[in-house]
Image (cartoon, rainbow, N blue to C red; front, side):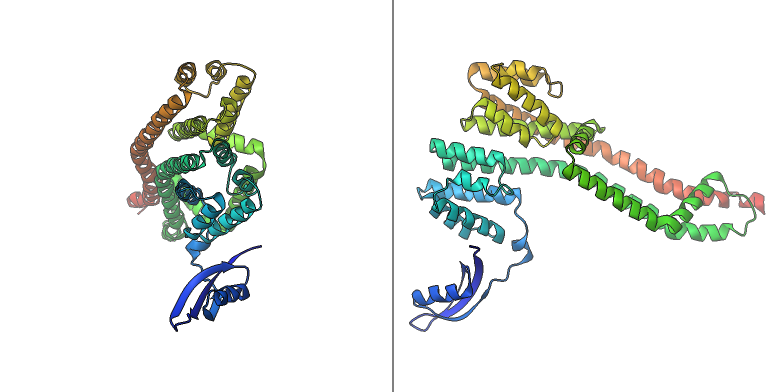
Length: 399
């Protein structure tokens, strides 16, 4: 049964005007509830949601929900009541509906982890594993708080990468727009001016004029081909596993940016593994879940191979030593943690280290890309302007 939000106005028994919001399956049920509470309903209408309240659920919303739920559970309330209270505190309408659905399923006898598994669009295997471990150990509030911390740190890593890449992408995009406008509107004016000179244009100018003619006459075809190619790549990325693997492999080989993706994958992997090990999960199960959370299929496949070796009785250090994608020091340090019985602490320490390296790499990349982008801009726009002015420099000999 889907519940909807309804805003209501009514009068109490002493004549006071009251307003509020309730969630029910129909306006008639809201009216019946109000009358049962001694309120004479005057108006009941569907709640109008702002666009920000209708948007899809994001990882940051799940992190906020997990922390709120952990806080309520720490007060000693049952899971169903805690879910209902947490739903009322959510600003996002879809998160409210999700929590209400979880509450109904838990009330019908399902465990919280089982209910979350039925909503796999919003909860991954890591979320479910942590909640299941919390239910089994009686530490559900603590592990929900750990889940919220893990989601917040993963979101922080994602923002670091986005901020590092947004500047060069924006600059190159603006440069391409400027060059396109010059080719479409400025170069034709120069072409008409050069037509009366009666002299042969320099090779660079002829190239730019030809590029301008091609853009003006074949521009729609180019745009259509680019759109079709982009759509085909997006479809292959979503549906074809080999295409996704190839994309992740190419990301790691990109100059400057490749190291950023590698450190982000290692930071996610180590942070996830530390969270799972501290929750009490076995090393094999923790490795499998952490592999899927690293965000890169090259690392994911390598870590899953190591997990299979550990499942056969191999030591963690030896199983990971053969993985060429991992830094050589990583297996040694994890081996030390395994031998001393402090593997979770060692993974947390490594996660902090790779997080710091990611921050340093992002700052260094920004410092290196700025002069490189300025050079590219100068070559693109300056070269275009120079090509158009070359015939003017030779006007004296023509006259």
